[in-house]
Image (cartoon, rainbow, N blue to C red; front, side):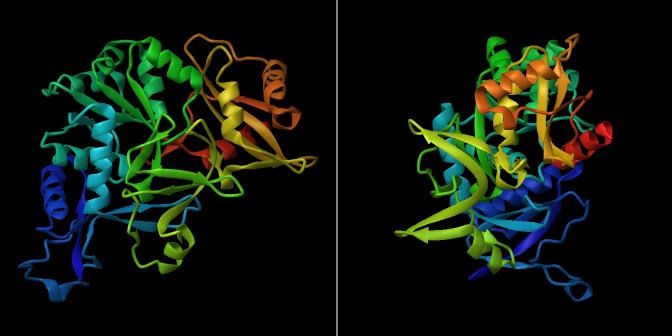
Length: 394
């Protein structure tokens, strides 16, 4: 069995149409949906009059409700197939963990799984989502968007950069953030300092880990959602199983074979992330392809970032490798300071990291930026950071 795939734009003028199409996709009365930032839509397959004038819409398996386009860790485009069953399982597990259905505020792009899940969860909860004003994320606009919420319970999904800006502003936006029953935080590693400052300000933060292939976040505060299983392979690679897994990739059976394995009757997703599991809690150490090799030693940048973020005055941090004649790659800490703070010395930063991770992990360079470059829903763009760092150091 198969069904049509309909492409819809995600700009504000088409939100009602997108929500309607998602409802139909979830209950099986309409085609599957692919959200596009390109501003063009394919017509609804039934009754279209100009089918001979253009290529037919793609066909997807009958159980697929949503197709999410993602560049993947290598930048190669891929389209993830998510079934209605998986999306419903994800939404139900999220509601169970957070305390029940709620009204959502959408602050993330609806072309990415985190933003689309805000819409899907709203549909399944029977609530009307509020969509942030277009034009970038600004604390004062965020406060105005929150004022439009009417539900007795309210949830929002943010990325660390957005949370950092709200805390740095400290005004009406932060006050509005404290009114949420849950603030999901994902898309990038979150420093312990950022979490501590948010919770001290009264923000109910829940960190999430997941990806398009798991319908978004499936591990909250290190603990898998109901039905989700986590294990590590011999190399420390994170593997995930459960009802939230994607059906596969559109037109890429090669990727299906590489990403999904069946072991003992259980289907597992082989992620590109390294992790540790202790006491049933998962700690993500970073992506395999982000690993820095310096002097023949592998350094996980996320582990270094956590330590750098502990130092006073650090608002955001991204650790990257930059070319080095002697070491192959040298570890560089790229930081954004909190308002009015002084940058730590490189010696103090190196000593702090070396004490905890050993001298090979200690950054050899320190670069201060006004803002870290981002991509997609606000994730730190490591490649762009590495380019900037290398340029500053030449």
